[in-house]
Each structure stands twice: as C-alpha cells, then as structure tokens.
Length: 165
Image (cartoon, rainbow, N blue to C red; front, side, top):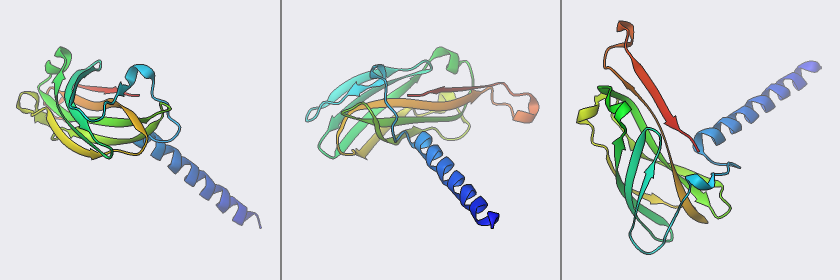
C-alpha cells in the first residue's frame, strides 16, 4: 500500500527538479534581471552599444522591429584571457527582459569552435532572432574556458570564466 505513494513522491520530486533546472538553464521563469545588467532596446532605428563583463567586451549594433532583433557584433577578450593559447569553449548568450525586469527568454548569439587557438578565433557574430512579446531590454551572459593547449593528462593549465545575470 505504501509503494504507490512512494512512487508518486519520487515522480513529483523528479518533475520539480527538472522544472527548476530548466529555469536555471534557460534564464526564464521568475528571474529578475538587475538594472545594471539591462540594455534598454530602441525600436525602429539602428542602435550601437558596448557591454563589458569581467572577461570580455561586446561591441554590438542592432535594429529591432516588432518581432525581430537583427544583431551583429564583435567580442574582445581581456588581457588575462589572451595570456592563454587555446579557447576550449566560449558561449555568449543574449537574454530578453520584459517590462517588469524579468527574464523572458534567451538566445545563443556566439559559440566558439571547440579547442581553437585564440589567435585563430573569429569573434564576430551576426544573428536574426525572434523576440518574445513584451521585451523592452536585453542582457548578455557568457561562459567559457581557456587553456595552455596541453591535454588534461599532461598537466594542463586552464581557466574557467563566466558572467551571470
């Protein structure tokens, strides 16, 4: 008799954890985006901007219509990342922010090829993205890792870096 309730509890726990992980990974849900991380959007004209994190700077240009954001830009790595020779991974995300300052979705705008020499990277992006309704601002986050290029079994030196909302 106790087994059905046990299985029900396990199912509820798994569903709850899955929903929580999905919210963390997508930047959706009840996540408020701090004012200092928001870039207010201007509709109808081409707009330029620069956003800086601890590890990189994004220079971008965008134009926004009712449903579409056309954005292109360039990523500049800070000096401490350029001290390494290999970009193991780099992902730059654009987050949509609604009128109440809450996350309304995200889009991957740049992803570096796996384990590419930093000097060989093309750090430019050009994207056309469908915008969720009610979006008034955007925010950037990133995650990556650089290394000296040696294999992990050979005593490699690496540095993991990120910026969150």
